[in-house]
Image (cartoon, rainbow, N blue to C red):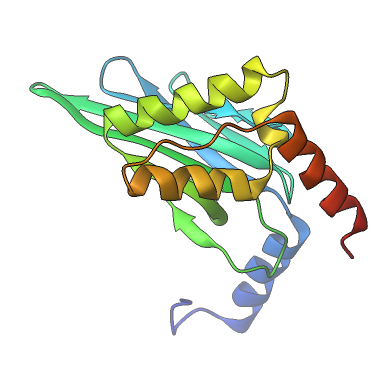
Length: 173
């Protein structure tokens, strides 16, 4: 929401900046043994190093990426999370995620190390089949999310499933 005292010129400039920058930006922080954020997969369009501990990676619209977040304090792990999202087009609906601007179409999100580890194993299995997880069908990541939420084992992402996704994408308007 724009502050009521913001001038119209300022509002026009910020909306123009958003329109001219179609990328989705993810800020990553790395504080050894305190907060560790990293991208598990995704095709970055740009990377900007802010300082020794922070950087911003950017993804083009339509690309899929996985953001892993982990944090701890003196007593142990306080956050384990993985989110798989699709970078959105300008003016497309999106959900918000911490450190993701403006947001993404969330395909999967899980909390807790056992579930995060299970998602990482699923990503490894997709890679083991010779496929880039960023190219996998978005519906597959939604499937993995739903199966894990129900306490069930996700189905394997097969080459046949990937081929069907590519064919659907080639004939879709």
